Length: 284
Image 1 (tube, rainbow, N blue to C red):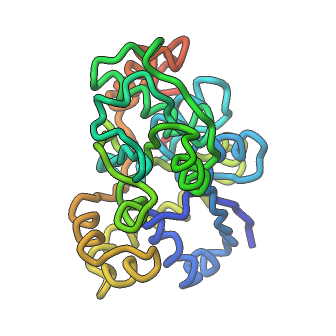
Image 2: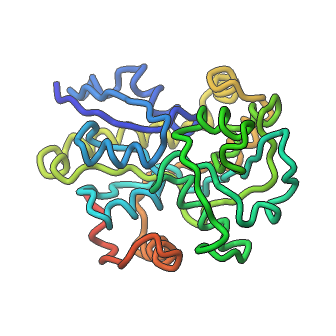
Image 3: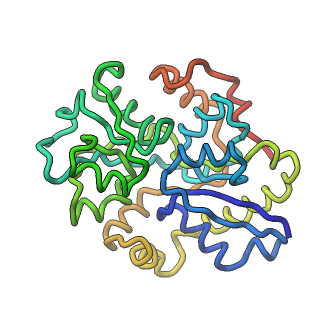
């Protein structure tokens, strides 16, 4: 039995992984695939890949591209979710901020530097014509729980996180939603360490074949909306809206998509240089 460790955020996007593991589909192929939740998101997973704590990760596209360029010895093997991630822009319910425009020059709460919440703060700033040198400040709060605790205390002024994950905290406090910022590219990819690809490419391909079979059929699973609602404490109408907006993928990024992400990261001065886009991808 070959052992593999995979990391991801504990969110509804990753329910297909839970289902395939629950059904022991990898075991049937001689693979012991173990899942680890990363509440700190992309920045925490990038570190785990570098430290060889995990073999592969379901991770934000812009975050892993930036980290590979900065020396993370991994490649992207496939897009997992092809639709954009809709980042909600949240403030504390008790704050005086009523619109995104009022957040110019205030402190963005982020999980860590290099995380999605950090990188997307730049994308949001650019969308609103802010000066990323002078109009962005950051307060590290580690994860969603950290933001829930920090924002009402005035530690950080706004927090960007996936809109549907944070919806219960908008409905019931302590957050208020003031805007949205969709990613301009497919949101989640699967990245694998290069040493794992060199030694176990066949097993990685098998893992992808199994998860892809499930994501192809995911929306047609009977009562999947109710399962998501119960498991992730979401209102049924919110789950149905999320399902209507979300598209899984079984293909890799195109070179043009990688180039687009690199151009944006370079423009926002989040990377110092671009690399050959093909060096970021692995093809089976």
